[in-house]
Amino acid sequence: MNLSLNTMMAAIASALACSAALGQHGGDVYLEQDYLGRICTGEIDDETGEVTHNTRVFGAEFGESPNFTNDPGFDSAIDAFTPGSTIGFTIRRALRAWDGADFDTIPAEQIRVKLGNLGPVLSPTDDTPVTGFALQVGSEGEFHHHLGYTLTDPAQPGIYLLELELWSGDGSLGTSRPFWIVFNQLDSEENHEAATQWVRANLAGCPSDFDASGFTDTDDFDAFVRAYEAGDFTADVDRTGFVDTDDFDFFVLAYEAGC
Ligand SMILES: [Ca+2]
Ligand SMILES: [Ca+2]
Image (cartoon, rainbow, N blue to C red; front, side):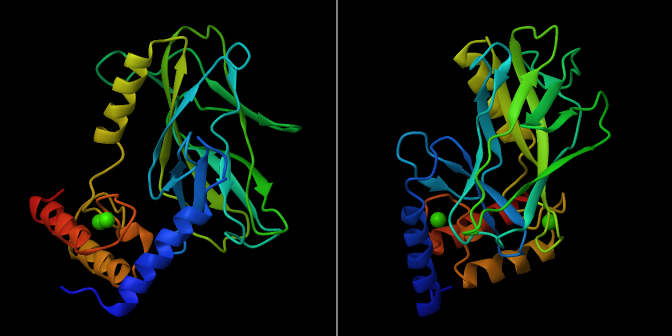
């Protein structure tokens, strides 16, 4: 398949959008809308401020004060969302603790989420989702907030996993796909990295399940081709920052492999 002029233009626009995002808050979760009108998470590089679109695994460190952090925050470009609308969060599952091999263990600890006089919202003790509070989109269509996360007693050292999703207060945007924050409580960077890699490999899904239905079928192929032809950033499946024929090849290989 050859790139049409429109696709090229869209790829260039998408690259420009990346650089326009420079100056966002490094390390925050970047929010934007994807091709289906859903809230979509990305990552803002700590040092360069550059955005990697469509990523769903984020790191965090407790200890700004004991058992507490308010990073990563959530940040967007101007005009990303409707001014005055709201975006809220849901904690999808019980907190999990890393045992060196997986995140099956539900520990005694929970995470308490709070911002000013909003909350606290406690992570559930089983996998019944808990709806949190909503926060305002700013007057220029930007969303920038830092939730406060506290690890409850006994707050043992270790790596903890929180699964979240974001929704629109007025239903004008689709709910985000699930995403994960991997918290380090006084454990080694090595363990934190190993646990984060495990989440990427085991929970963040396969690249060919493009519509995130949980399996790969022809709907995924159709959805990918639509996004690809539109030059949408979600079609950057090989994560180079550009949508080009390499993405098409990458997707087809993943699709044919079933994942
Ligand atoms: Ca699918
Ligand atoms: Ca690419």
